[in-house]
Image 1 (cartoon, helix red, strand yellow):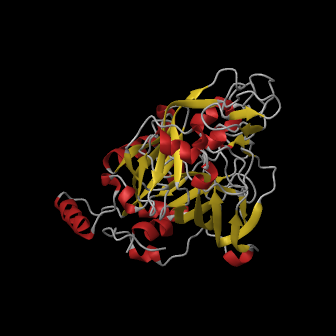
Image 2 (image 1 turned 30 degrees about the horizontal axis):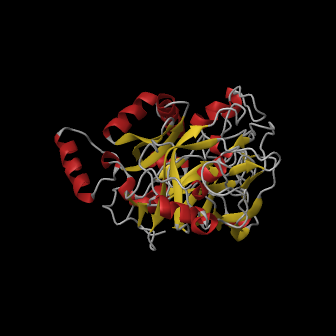
Image 3 (image 1 turned 90 degrees about the vertical axis):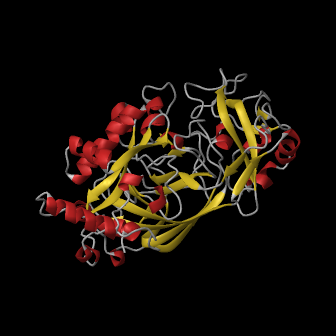
Length: 459
C-alpha cells in the first residue's frame, strides 16, 4: 500500500525489517486469491450460517454493496435494519486471532439517494422498528411488502395491503451526485419525484438486494444544499459469536436488544460477543487499515452501509446511504485476542496531537529532553482504539479499557496519553468513539501491529 506523504515518524528503523511475530504463514492454509461478493443477509449476523470463501491470508474481497440504512428500514422483511454482505471466511482464522483489513478502494455507484431524521411509526413494530417490523393491520411480523406509487405511504403489506413502513421522515432530503461523485446537491419536489419513479436505477441497486429504495419516498424538505462527497463504510467488520441484527452489532444499538420482546433479544453477557462492525466512523475509508477481532472460526468479514459523506457523530441519525463497489485486502494476525476493532486512519484523519512527529520535531524534542536530564524519548506511532456503549460515557470507558488491555497499560496512563498525544473522537452518537493517541513503537511491536503502523505513517 502506498505510504503517506506526511512527515515521517522516528520509529526505530530496525523494527521495519522484523517479521510480525503473530502473523500467520500465508502458505499454511488454502484459500482463494479473490472472493467476489454480491449476496446479502436478511439482517441477522448469525455465526451458524455458511460463509463465502475462504479468502487466503493476503487475498482480496471485492464486493458490490447495497444502501445500508433507510432502504432496509422501510423493508420490514429485512430483520436487522441494514442489508450487509454475506460474510467471507479468512483461511486459518481462529477464535482469538485478528484480521487486518486494508481498504484499497471505495467507489460510489448511486446517482442519487435520500435520507433524513426518522420518525418511528407506532403500532408497526415489536419493541424495535429496526429489527421486528409488524403490519399494523394483520399483525404479521417481518411482512413481505410491495410498492404502490411513491411517497411515504407507498410501502404496503403483501398480505393485507396496509401501509406498514416502520419509519417515515421527520425532515428528509433527496440528494443527487455529480458525475465524478465529488459533490451532491439536494433537489426539490419535481426532481425528487422523478427519481422516485425510477428509484432502483438512480440508486444503482444491486440485483440481489431485496430492499425498497428510499428514493421512493421522494423527501424534499432541504433544497439547494451542497455537500462534499467523501465515501466510507458504515459497516465493516467480523461476525459476532451470537446472532445479532446487523445494525445492532455495536454497544449502543446493541443495548436495545437486552431484554427485548422480540426473538433476537440478548443478555448483557451475550452482547459482549459483539464485534462492533457497525461503526459509522468516517475515517473507515480508502487507505485506512481496520483491525478486527475474530470471535468465530473463519472470522466472517462482512461489509455494507456505504455512506457518501458524514460529519462526526452522524447527529441526524442517518446520512446518505449509497450503493458502491469496495476492494479489501485481508491479513491474518494470530493470537491478538482483541475485544473490539482498532483503526490506523489515513494521516489527514488523525487528530493534530496524534500525528507522528516529524524529523524536525523529534530533533527538537531530543534537545529539550537532554536539557532536562531525560536520557531517551519515546519512538511512537498513532493508533485508534474503538469503544462502544449505550451512551458516549460508556463508549469512552469501553475504548479506554480496550486500549489498556491491548497495550498493557493502566487506564489512567491511557487517559493521560489520549489527552496530551491524541483525542477522544465521536464516531456515532449515541455511543461509538475513537480513543486515538500515540503509542510507544515497542508496544505496537509486541502486539504484532508495528508493521501496519509503519505502512501508514513510516518512511
